Amino acid sequence: MRRRPPNLAEFFKALHPTGFDSSKYTEVDRARDFKAVFDATDTGQRVLWQILIMAEYYNTTAIPGDPHMTHFFLGKRALAMEILNALSPTEAPEPQERTADQPHGDET
Image (cartoon, rainbow, N blue to C red; front, side):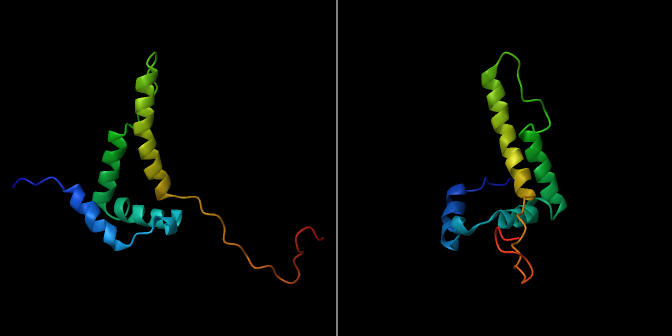
């Protein structure tokens, strides 16, 4: 049985009414979602591996004497790096409440 290619126009049309608000989507949210897609199952890990191969993540990006192709490969690799960065964001520590014995600002 042959699969039909996905209808991306329908996908984006269906996604719009979900109320997704990108302004409230944090790095932690993105990491949770990316881990659910790429890290939670063997299938997701295989797909991530294929993306890294397609992006030539593990290959040299510099093409001696050809700056155009070097930039082309750097662009492909940049997407893989964005995905990997989304899987493990840097999180700032939560602010802690000041206790009565801690100084205020520049007080000592």
